[in-house]
Image 1 (tube, rainbow, N blue to C red):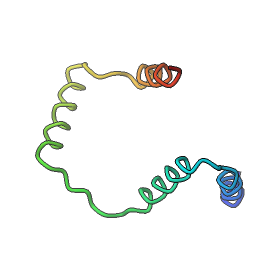
Image 2: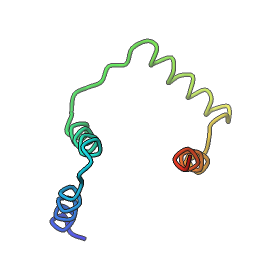
Image 3: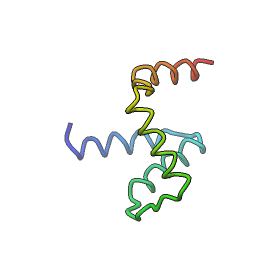
Image 4: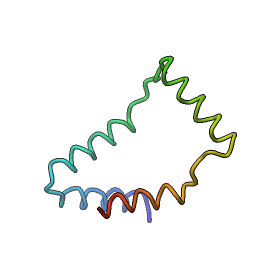
Length: 77
């Protein structure tokens, strides 16, 4: 599928959305993608990242497959 076809497909799908919340979510996603500013992490965020890295290193992480199963389970409730 070409870029032009993808754009048309997106335009058509967005045009058919009547849910204001969903449209706002799409707008937020587009704004996020366009944002090129640098995010500066604070001390707590750096500590959380370090903790997560240690968990992964120690094998305490969760596989993407397990996460997807958990999300699907939550969404089915």
